[in-house]
Figure 1 (cartoon, rainbow, N blue to C red):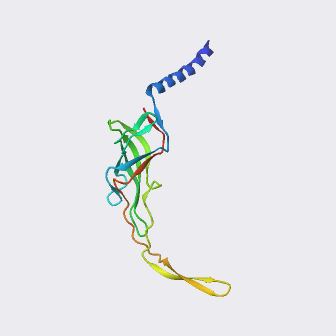
Figure 2: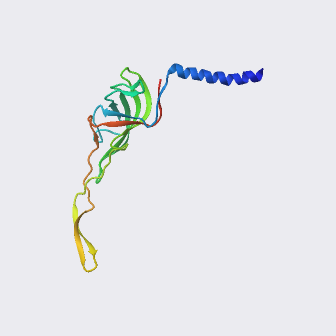
Figure 3: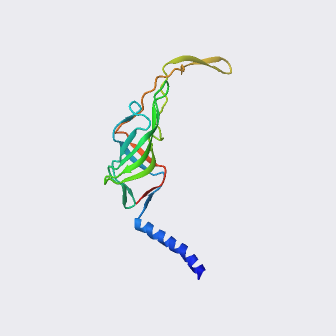
Length: 183
């Protein structure tokens, strides 16, 4: 009789967990999901610092099956977690971490996501153009004669970098780094 009850307890616990999940109707949005958003105000290395709060809004409903998981005008908020000012040869750059979702109804959920812009998680950071060029002769040898080609090559000096700016018209993607469970 004892063995029967010992076997029955795990079965009842599993059944209880199953009914709780059905009662809450959880929707799991998998890691790697992307949502297109726009910045609520311009973000630039000129006037932001690491830790400053950033806001994004999605322009349309995002559906998972028959459920509207991120209704239009959902706010995604987070902070700047990396900022590099422009220097000689490199433009300024920043990265953003998204930590909260605020639905139009006022409900708030914590998420773990990053900004994804133009194929990467960094906004800006490109190399600048060379400031000047030098002429260089590249000598080539053939079977019968020696000749050269005159070519312009960068002198090694580069222009000073520009500030990285994300406007309110630039499409950005929020990339989920963990599964997001909606209840």
